[in-house]
Length: 597
Ligand SMILES: C=C(C[SeH])C(=O)N1CCC[C@H]1C(=O)O
Ligand SMILES: [Zn+2]
Image (cartoon, rainbow, N blue to C red; front, side):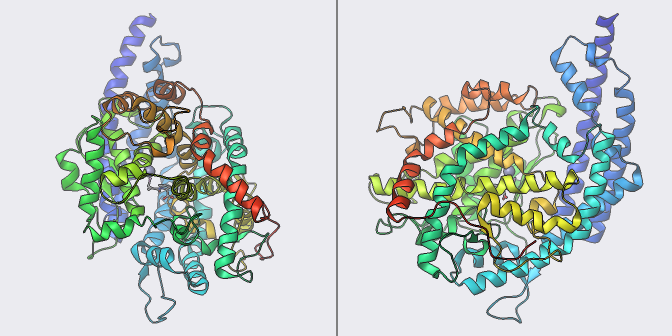
């Protein structure tokens, strides 16, 4: 009878889950060995192990689908069977599986090891993205040097991966079809378990776009003031190499010469960190202490022993920051090439947020050790970082001196947050709208660069610094495209982290709507056990329930909405509208004159 069948099913799936944990542990060990020491033999070993594990997964999958789990009464049991019934890339035959692994690995190692020559010294050709090119791009205010760095990086890390990327798309789409998806776009969106995910992304963009356009118009004017109207036009897109970041995904590095009230003392956190002899380890210790102050879990001993927090000097590694779960309940690691600056201070909290999520759901079955959706995992650390980056907290830890806020300082602070958080949204949206089109076949290889830049111009109001052709492949010059990492997760994160922040601030008594002494912009939840406990309760759920349940558990809302972000930035939005009106700024952008299609 069904009762007995369900009991037998539970025994089976719990045993399968234990085996899956061992497989995932072995996969993480092999992946770590390769990405923390990029050599041919480590790459081959990793692919060999992935192949072996995929055979075991395929075997288990054959057995799992024999169960009539759709009729089981127990919700969690059905959910476990449903997740285990999806085989993933292991559904490919061995030869195609291996080809797919090789094409992604080829792109990723190219990205990780790409070097370019210096602008000022053409014989110096050992510049790596981290820390060399990143630092130069953040500091340089010479448009010609920035153009050189931009063009050379996009040639080395982007164009080179065009062939591998085309093969990856072909094979990954085959795997999608073997999993009963039309294409990879549908597969990626299925992770969010809502039928209208893409429409939700579009609606969120409609909500945020007016604020973005005001910010874009203001920044364009300040850049035109600085570089002249031969470099920055009054009504066109902004050249993408002038925004302080290789992908123009955050504009925080141009804050020093574009902030609204320049005569207000400059808040240079990076300089303060260096003056106070901050080290990578100190940044990690401070982040760990913040989480502990919320009554969340301390980093375990193994974390401090096994993590790589600075770039090694004796080998090549994948420097792009990452957090690792080894699925054994005690081994959790971060790998990042930390530099002592504000940006990496944020990144450290971002990665520690991933580890905290791992720690909170480690008691769950292996199959539920995941974010409620991929965006949740990206939002944990950033939510904490919203408190850390508040003037109140920065004063608390001594990174900012001096008095409390006045109106102008608050606008400067909101501007600093806006050129980090608001400008990121059209970038993130572009990256996956582009790849949805590629996976769907709407964008063929001969259109890759043209379609990528059409979206960049339409959504971000940017243009390339020089003409582009289909010899280029600029999308792959971004880590996540070269590493097959879905990106809508960050778009979701940058929306929901403000919903999380608002709730936690209210729980911490730090934010009271309409109370001008308890403003959202100045909220710091540090040491609030009430906020920490509420966050922990949501994190403990992992992916055991559909994400609206997790969202509701924490915020009372069951949907992702832009209202948290728009409430946070409202004073800035009003200021920008008034300022752009005062200067008669053209809002939006006319078509670019640069050739890229
Ligand atoms: C820090 C990570 C590792 Se999950 C990252 O890739 N992030 C964090 C914010 C956006 C995105 C990026 O760097 O593009
Ligand atoms: Zn992340």
